[in-house]
Length: 240
Ligand code: PXP
Image 1 (spheres, helix red, strand yellow):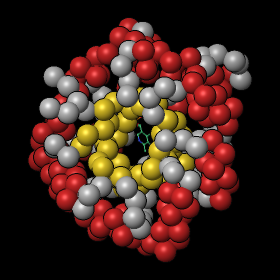
Image 2 (cartoon, protein in one colour; image 1 turned 135 degrees about the vertical axis):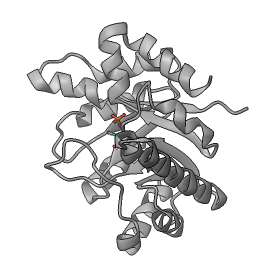
Image 3 (cartoon, rainbow, N blue to C red; image 1 turned 30 degrees about the horizontal axis):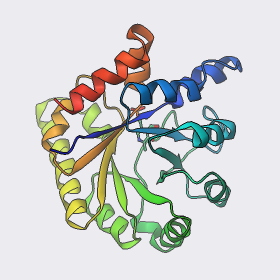
């Protein structure tokens, strides 16, 4: 059986650093520890407002990450330039609003198909794999395929926040339907947002999801047990 991949999002380490404008804790150090503990990918979101990850982090991570560097970014010309320069392994396009606490919803691919198709092509020309962060919605999955993205990341936020068994089961089904459709269309399928040590196992029945990008819960757990133990435990849950 193919092992499920774990991408660790180290933005939250940078959030702590930026809260005091110190040099520590360094997300580059965190990334190295995550890889040593079995992470298959390092994920960072370089936001327009630079609230956590800085350009310096992305540039150094490009030199140090030995697995795969997944850069989450808005589809802007500024980010395209940085991508051409840094060459992450994967660019995951996400919607971005300045006032949000974190990425709140998926990308509306359907309503910006022409612009996104061009943007995706520009990244692919530079040999960067493109993934689109979308809600578990079949129209968005089909639109992602039409703009020729190679992968999607399904937003699991609603599933994680669902109250009660019925709502939870309905959200899980939406993720399963989206994942299967994307898989049949030939796209690689990742999932992420809001996943933690208690809810991640429920998703494992959805076979087409081969990669999980998880940040907040792992960094939070690391405060108490250390980063290597936090990563090892999540990897174990993903591959029981
Ligand atoms: N995937 C994407 C596209 C994200 O925007 C985020 C949040 O930065 C994550 C995964 C990780 O989410 P969390 O920090 O809730 O695990």
